[in-house]
Length: 259
Image 1 (cartoon, rainbow, N blue to C red):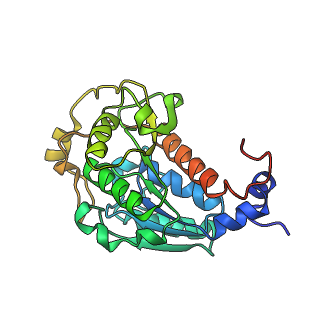
Image 2: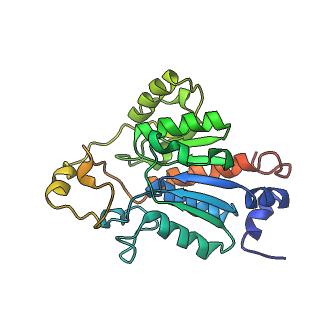
Image 3: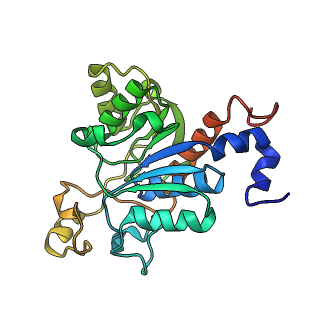
């Protein structure tokens, strides 16, 4: 019988769709990258999610985030994403965590319940902690490296972090992961040299802040604000989602699918 995921099943097969239906994916960071990853995952038939983000939709998110519209400005991103995902698949089991993941609150998350972790957060400390927690729990993880200040979406690729070059964030991550005993980390990264923003937007934010009332983390807290586009962060999120789907179904996909 035809259903919402019939076209995907034509490529992956019924066992793969069952595996996705019973998988739980934790998405840390529901922004330009994480939002599109969620979109692709729920449209692919993943059945359960944890969405982690304490931020609210800001007017400046409209240029790149799939959940950002004039109607959603001021709403919690995780709530907006959950509602959108339930419109796509009402049977999805979605848990929302309105908080910012930090090493200090890592114990609050049920890592052992996750089948996959998708890291789309911005801070190095959170990324490092997620990699450490994933390794300890034996859960696969994929992490987004720098997408800000990039213009060429065709330069992004998936590999172990040991193979990265050029990307400043990946350079820091490699060094710090080694200190923590994490030898491998699947990442999406680009070898494009970051473009320098034409002006320091932090000054505008500092004196003309338009962050939604009650926002826990404001742009005025950031030392620098990267430039972004509508066409780069989505590519990163979609690449990450595709890799998650491939890994979750690797053992049950029909022969010939996704070689």
